[in-house]
Each structure stands twice: as C-alpha cells, then as structure tokens.
Length: 433
Image 1: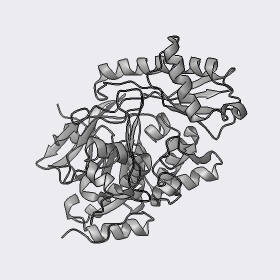
Image 2: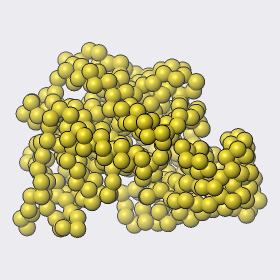
Image 3: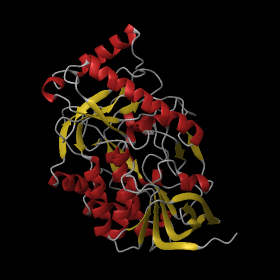
Image 4: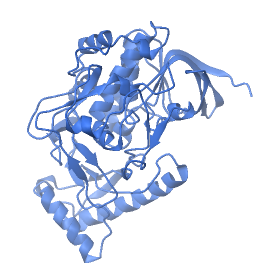
C-alpha cells in the first residue's frame, strides 16, 4: 500500500515529553526545520501528564549546587515568572525539588516551542518506520485522518519507550531483564487540605501510619513509604504513593489492567488520608494523572551503555553532554524504595555515545530510553537529566545536517562548545579521538 506523505522536516522529533520538547527547541533555534510529533493533545509527557515536580536539577542533600542549565533552566525561569512554582526539599533527600502547576507548564512548553520555530503535530501515533540500510527515511504515523508518512533527514527518538528505535530494529533491553522492572505509579492530587495541620505530619509519621493502617487489615496500601507534597495551589497537595508492579509498559493489555489498578489504589490512599491523617478530614480527590506513570520499558543499546559503576563511581567521560548527581532510585515491586547515593557533592557525566542507537546513522535518542543498565537508568531518568539530554540531542541533530546527516560524524568538541554557549552544564572537556 502506497502511503501519502503527510509532512517532511529536516529534523523529526518523536515524543513531546521533557526530553522531546527540549530537543525540538534546541534544534529549531539553530534554524533547522523541526517537527515535533506527540500522541496526546498537549506537550510535556510525564511532566504534564503524571508529575508536578522536576528532579535532578540540584545535587542531593543540603548541597544547593545546580547541575542542569541551558534550555531546561530557561523553562524553570518561565515557570517562576508565572508565579506557579515553588522549590522544596525532596522527600527522599534527593536534592531540591521544583514543583509547578502542570497546566501552566503545558503552556510554557507550547510557547517555548513555538517561539523557537518548532512545528507541532499532536494526536499522532508512530506505527512503524521505513528504512534504507542504516538510515530511517520516514515514520509511518496514524491518527483520525488515517495513515501516512512523515519524512525527515534526521530523527530523534524521545518517545520514552524507544518506539522509533524498536520499529527500526535497534537492539534493546526490555525492563525486567537485568533486575526487577521498576513499578508504575498513578499519581493524584487532593484539594481542600488544611495545610497548617497537614504539614505538621512528618514523613516518618506518614510512613508509620501507613504501616499501621496495613496491619489493621482495614486498608490495602501496597507502598508504605510514598510521599505527599505541597503545591503552588492553596489547599492542594500532590502524591507519589501508589505502586503497580510486574507490568510491561509496552503491552496494551497489561497497561490497561495497570491503569485500572492504579486508580483503585489511589482511591484507597485517598480514603487513608481522609481517615488517618490530620488535615485531610474534608479533603477530596481533584484528579488522577492523565495516564499511569511508567518508569522503565525499553532501553536501547547505544555506542556506550551507562552502568551502575559509572554512576556510583561518579565517572567522567570525554564526550560528556550532561551531568547527574541523582541517586539510584529503584522502585522495585516491594513496599519500599531502594536508594543508593553518589559520594557527597559528586556527579557523573552522561556520554554522547549513550544517545547513539546501534545500527542507525541518522537517529539519536534522549530521555528514559537512552542506553543504560537498569541501575544506571534508575538514576539518570530524572526529568532534569532527560531535558539536558534532549538539548544535547537536538543540538547534535542540527549539527549533523552539516555532516551528511550522520550523527556519528558530529565533532564532539564543537558540540560541547555549542552546548556550553547555550548554558548547558557538564564536566567533559577532551573529545574522544
């Protein structure tokens, strides 16, 4: 069947999450014709569908050093001007958290993308790809208008699930193959909270009360150490409490069951808060996350694979394009979460090679489908780092337009210089020969 060509661009970015938005903005700012494709009707991915907080911008603990700059920080500054953002200590000691109002962020992403010259195509699914040897030539997409092609010179896979790379036959590791897959979480917001009383409940008290509730037999709370935090909206708190385990986030049947289970758990946690936690007596559910939060699915094999040792040993790379100080945060199927921290004040580099999918010459990836092991991924998937990777991928894609559309021909030193000029923060200095 001959498919019509719906659109064409120099650079096609698949997936408008935090990584995809920054990738598209970075590419478009160079003057490259950039098309950003998204299956939902708004931008932001998990940053506007599931969460209300950016993590990874700062070092953990009491160290207030910021490790992410550039376009990601410009987004934070735009949020600050809206007066719908606050900074607060992370519930887990993982560094200063930046909490915002998700609808406001939707508009910030849109305005930033359009100002940069990004063309948007929403309500569009990637169904397949067409290739010639080691190059992707077009995406096969679908929507209400039917199926068609979107052609491009370079592609950036920021789909979260590595949809483009998977369809193109890039080797990958599925979640669960090298350690229990990270669980899924339905977040929710609660209104009409008496904040004065609720904020007096320490996290240790919340954990104790969850354990006691489970022991009473009156509640089913699968996760006993989640968190509740304040938001920029008066009387509104947001949660990270539910836990749905043993789910393949790329299987629609399993994902359907997970969505139903996640909302059922959320309602149980709302009941627990109202009945057991001071300040929540008259609280009510405002909304569930647009979809269940997925932490880990396909992780592509790239030219380099970030490892647990790289993270915990704070390794630096000559082809660094971003940095991270976030701990390994493993939401395993049990009732707790496992944390492993880097040495105090340390960061590790994210190498450019981890964004280069094996077997493809005109594709980059960024965000949670980068090339990393399970443990390394549990650290580097923070949204601050996903955004920083996105900026690097978009900048590199624009540079590759001058190298025969070959992402491996991009000069690392020039890429690093451009990223630094654009405000990115990382430590690598010497390019790989």
